[in-house]
Image: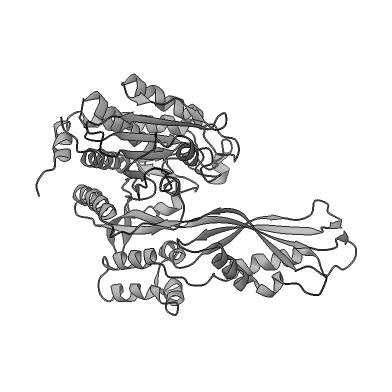
Length: 489
């Protein structure tokens, strides 16, 4: 295989690369020790953004001011300018906020190490801490790539931009990527955006592969409410709204929403099936059948595989917050449940509502008698639609092919798979850029052994990243950036 220019540049820095890896690891540890838990309206990403800004500016990298939609919710955009202003930038993006983790009594909640201690475990070689894979690892790698390019005077044909953003975990990026796209579009305009979630090693049928995301589901928050007369707790209440909401919870947690096959799902299943031997490949492709899919999920796939592929074939509806009375001896007049709905790309609000009513019972949302009120009411609180790019579009296919070839070579031959993500990322914000619609890909490289269930690390207890896998990802990201930016010395 011919050596690429990007690969040859990295080979010239082979000897000092170990120190670059160590510095990047230390940056990640520092970021983990900065508590940036997202509390909804409140957060502290500004502290982490200032730390990154200081690192980059000390090396001469051009940085924006700390951009806050609200105090504490800081964003930073850094840029290394390319020689050809006619080419659109490459944008690396990483959110600095994390979900919650215990700061005290963490052992009681099952953590092996302090979630904010950034400890490297000597037994398994993993760095433990909240944000290690979601996604301060991408922030640390991106900072290191910019430092490497700037310190060594590597020339780029196009601009390289890095956005360290707030608020991905709670408010639909209200204070983060969405805020930047709407208020500072020139800073984050790009031809290609690389962020979570992809380029992590996965395993199926004993084979390693690396998914690269090209599509993702949307996220809707739905509130379902029941009302009743209320009253004293000493007598019977057949119209107790708690009973009605309990039935909603039972229905949504015991029955799937209808099977729906999208083009993105069809493509993903086709790509995965190519990794399997016959007849497993033939059987796996039967998931697109609404008749065969339940059997495959229940009897042939592992629980982890079912949790990955099942949501690609259904809108998801999980009950998360139940609210009712506030006094022990009083029957409440209202009860409600919040439903976290993850919606396949292309599915409309009307179709989701129909799916939910089909499981709960459409009759419960209809008037029971003239002048009365329905047993249940439904309200859409938040609506964020998913998206799907065409994997055969020349720009999308070219980017995936170029990135994939680097992964395959550096992993010793493991293939890549373009896929639909069942979660939601900041890609949904960048792809709505008002001036330039970029190619958005999930590409935050890391290599993990098959013994680690990677998907369980996100938002989970003992979130961790293999140190060797992190260093491998840094090399992949560095070469990918040099390739996409047509770098030269």
